[in-house]
Length: 396
Ligand code: ADP
Image 1 (spheres, protein in one colour):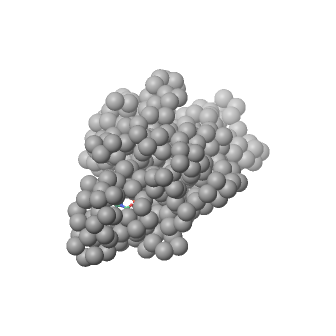
Image 2 (cartoon, helix red, strand yellow):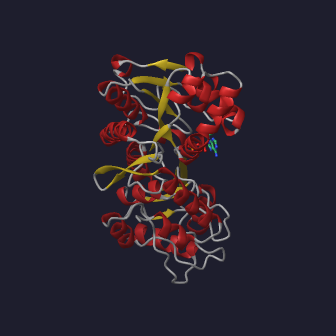
Image 3 (spheres, protein in one colour):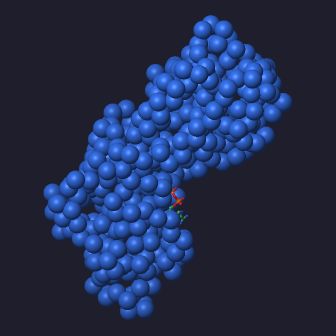
């Protein structure tokens, strides 16, 4: 059978195990010899026990576990050609020419580069007598299928990345717990959630927790505090209900001081009998000069202006932890099966693909198109062109 290997790379997320399980079982079902590569690219470069044949039962009882049982790592060696040469040698000597990579845009970029170089890597290995002429001929094509594991939902081309839904469950559980205590004390709660370049978790959290305010990287208020921030919930709901790929807040040009705006809103809510206020801050929230709007800064504003009892909760890695939601388990299963199908159907001309979710369908898209779009979003954000970032991120 064909040699197929699966590995997880970059940051971990819930649902990766479901994807690994699905790849292994679908691969075996279709007659492949399936391998795990442990610790991401590092295991591919180091070889040895890191590359291990998987069987049907080696992926039993993992679907409910968070993180990734085969380990993930960042790997400097793979950035260099010498590392990729070692990796290629380890794959060829095991007859592996099909790779399923589960990771973020960095991991997918690395996989694509590896595929482009494959032929020249094999030539070099042959020259150095590290592989045989037969092996050079037999394993001359490398096929790649990717899946995106990330809790931030920060990848272009997919409605959801594997792990986002579970992270939302974690955040909502935490907010519900906090709300019950805040209610007793008439407090203001500021919750920082993950999302360095993508406000998806913050926006969905704000909507589902009746938050009073949300700060996200895509809609920064002006430095002179003149712009109105995204407290326009109707716009958010509309974005969510529409077919938006990822939620964004249309920039609202009404000039307004965000500090005033925030304070006025919190005061109004208290006057109308609300006993607590919730403010959600995305990890990457910034102002228009790119300066961070931190939970600490927001707290200072609330305490100085309103003298409200204000507490901060930074959820951190809790969001990545715990068991995957049903949605992420099914998402991982479906994407894993589709990735294996893509590899089995690949011809020498087939480009590397990434399996994404479009509507309720697992589909294959050209890997590099999605990576380029994702990188273009990051660049637009860095250039402070938020409108462009939002436009690029939307469904194409
Ligand atoms: P993520 O996949 O979550 O975006 P990273 O950007 O850290 O995480 O990438 C994970 C790993 O992928 C890196 O440690 C490196 O081994 C590999 N990688 C990333 N970018 C490249 C690249 N341009 N060339 C080769 N390998 C890369």
